[in-house]
Length: 373
Image (cartoon, rainbow, N blue to C red; front, side, top):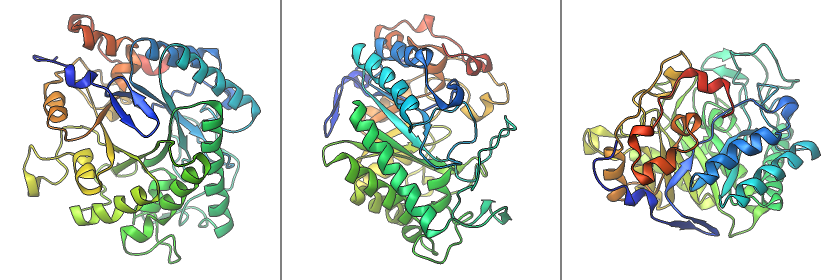
């Protein structure tokens, strides 16, 4: 736990119309507690507890846009339709009543299946090239009409988020889901304007989705996109092997209207290009900020001894030092830090860090995934 001051974590930060009291973000975490896609009072109370305890910005679990196979779990919440949107209205009202700020994460899983359920969404399954992973074909590529409808659904969800009173919105463009499947050469072998040998060409779908969000929400509404090099299909996969390639990937999205790049790593302290700046060099969020000038969020095993992929296999984690995080934030490597499992198991985590109650921090165990605490 911190041996020095945590003041940098609790300094205010603003981006466009979003004013945050501190730098701590609740990371999106799939919970699957919304039967039939409808978030209920228990979901609203879950987010309200984190707002009451001082989380600077809450990003919701992934929420499905209005496409037939946008999700791979029936209890993942939708972000379309009157019932689901009424549920999200209660969520944001409760969060605001507690003094919090929040944005929904808009999600389309693409061809990524869920091994923890036998449920299958109605077709068609959307993917850039009909591939579930490199060289594993299962269906036909998305048509131009399907791509256009998907981008339209993203824009509509963003418009609904603003109408309901959310403070921001995030697109899920990471971890091997639909937008990321377009980025990755292993799953995008298209030869039209949504594919090609360069990352700039393969980023076209993501760029158009961001433009749709910007058009739907106006110039002052902050837009976030979550990105990753790694994929659930391949932990070692990389979109950008060099800073130049990373700039080709990220700069067009910032130019299209992304205000914040949420840069996902399994371990936030790992350097992105150690051959350039060493083993203590900039992480993904640090390089993204350096190359684009955009606001960045870092994330990955913050405050815990183990990383999150291992948690699904039953590995527990104990509270861990925040000193490395504080040093990186003090040198302004990135702007905000997202916390996942530590906040999942303990809604009071932010408050405890702020008041120095390290002895009261909780371990993370797999059982926390099965409850909406």
